[in-house]
Image (tube, rainbow, N blue to C red):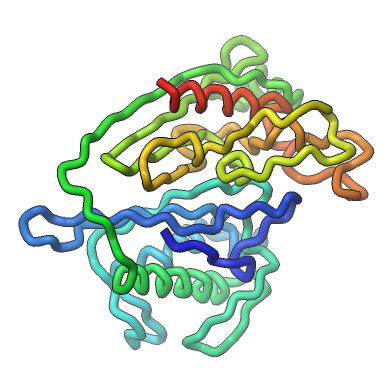
Length: 301
């Protein structure tokens, strides 16, 4: 795990300013000769650095990040840093809140340029920086080897309550043709995979990092008074020494925030003059507490 990637490359556009900025890494190596077979990278950030003006189908930042690790970092055909080979996989993390690189200043040390405006040059600079950071970790960080890990999978299917009127209408019209149970419930799933001292929790949403890592608040102006429900955070409840939270996994039910942060009506929290982004693309104010209770039950079994 690499901590403290910093706000230069990853911003949270909604208070409280809780980031899921650690890069969680796991290598897979051959038993026969210890060669690298692949790597799992887990980081929370929307792949939207190229911006909304882009009309091309693109992988955005994971493309340069993965290619930089597998093949090396290149500029104009010149190799700046060799890669590690193998197959590299990127899994997103807790991206709600909103974790994004839009508006961030990205420095490219190879070009000695800064990029703030959305562009593919900014995407390349950002992900070559990330690839460089991971390559440093491969070479310098102490890695714990886990031989013959016990592997287990637990899964839980359940229903969310659909409180969003637009989403309910979309289900009635067949536009959202996925997992509806009646008119006001949506079927979804969570999973826990354990490999020895490693645990991987999958959540079907864009999860606010404070539910994953802690930091849920009860700000004045919130729509629902009461104590914090979503505590202790997921990582504190998860088993093992190394804990991965994979967002947008199995399913996508929109943004999931703590109930005490729900803020669709005036007065708005943190002195904001308009409603925050997120509630409009959420199933409803009970989604966070429902997910929290289901995950807590899964982890306690």
